[in-house]
Amino acid sequence: MKNVTCPSCGFVNSVFCLRTGYSCSQCGHLWMDKVPDYNIIPSLLTPSQTGLFEAGKIFEGAHVCESEQSAVLMEMATRHSQYQADHRQQGHQLWDKRVKELFKTLGQYTYSEIAAESWPEQAEASMLELGTEMYNCWRKSSGHWSVASKKHKYMGGDMKMGKDNIWYATIIVGD
Image 1 (cartoon, one colour):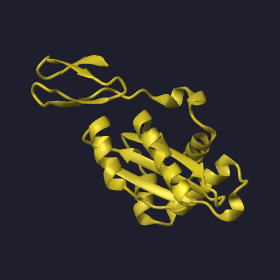
Image 2 (tube, rainbow, N blue to C red; image 1 turned 180 degrees about the vertical axis):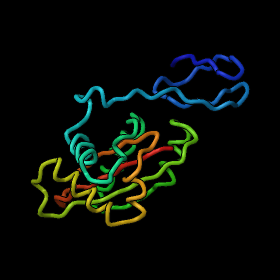
Image 3 (cartoon, rainbow, N blue to C red; image 1 turned 120 degrees about the horizontal axis):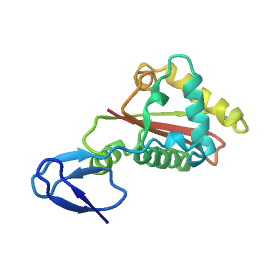
Image 4 (cartoon, one colour; image 1 turned 90 degrees about the horizontal axis):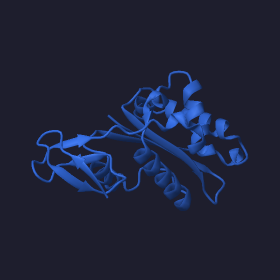
């Protein structure tokens, strides 16, 4: 637990330490602490996250990786990538539940999610090759590319491999 002071009324609220978005219990004001830029500490990124982000930095027209990395969105994207891998099905399953959780933890932003999967013959590909394949998939879908081609306020992403030797990727953004 930690104490945070409402910037609107000055009331001191006790909150769970990992939260970055707050609602004052006294006046109801919503505010957000700045989320640290974890990109400055590359050792905190997993190899799959690094591959996805490095691919995004060099993929022509992609700008999503210019967004500030959010620890909350990173965790959420990792969880959803693992969910897809566990169920061996790419998609946006349970998106409404993730959005509700994000409203409670990160705040009242507009959230979007993109997901993709690799091909069976890419099971042994490098993380950079896998990341590039995800951007190739997103480029072919106007809805997904509208997220991948822009810089957002916050972003998080990851890739996980299922028992079917398919890699499943997720990027979640908040604006």
